[in-house]
Length: 287
Image 1: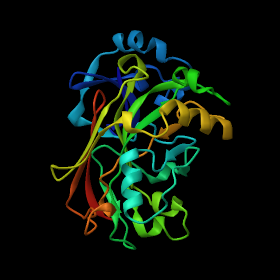
Image 2 (image 1 turned 60 degrees about the vertical axis):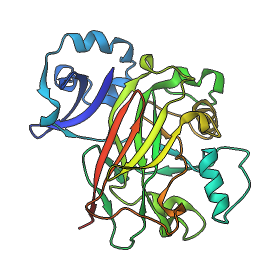
Image 3 (image 1 turned 90 degrees about the horizontal axis):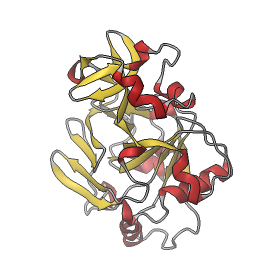
Image 4 (image 1 turned 135 degrees about the vertical axis):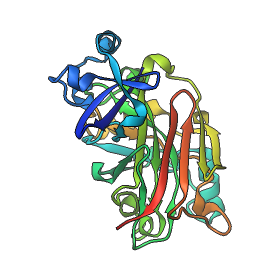
């Protein structure tokens, strides 16, 4: 099933996509005001039954999308986690060594933006770059989770554009600054539950800028699998329902091109992942 967070009639809620409409489960079940609270309550196994009891009466084109999980406790992001992206990093004369462990950093929730909403280029930079990625939403609390059991802790999958402000990313040889500008991490349009996507399925991932294909691969090219990333992150801190694992971008990012190419106001960027959907965002200049 496809679950999403949204605003309608001036009210934030969440629900299930049914065709071109939404069943508002946040309205029907006020004890679960957010998708995150529903997941945390262990209700996902009952979502089909719950959705069947609610009329899908809100057109998708009448809602304002919110990030799938608007305020996760943690957004854990992987860097250089595709072999083809590693090769373009090497070609650029940067670090040649593959890491023995998943390299990660944290995003803050205020850096997120929803499907259909503008990704903002800050005034301090003209190097806003795209990074299409698979996102994983954690479904139950866990610490020291073995990779072999990691799929049991996943609520579902979504699409992420981990857009980067490149020169800020390299200010101190630590990328956090370039990854946390407000309204740069696009997340959506919805979460697809795990019953629709097998744990070992290789998903095709593509990114398009103004309709031009700029990234194309499958998740089989990951260096560290989703399960390995969950195992590693949960060794550091307890993962809780609604946490987001953003699993890294493939090759084809703008800074690797000669000359480098970046997103500018007026552009439209789309990230599409097989079995999930298309995350689409215009680019705008920050006010």
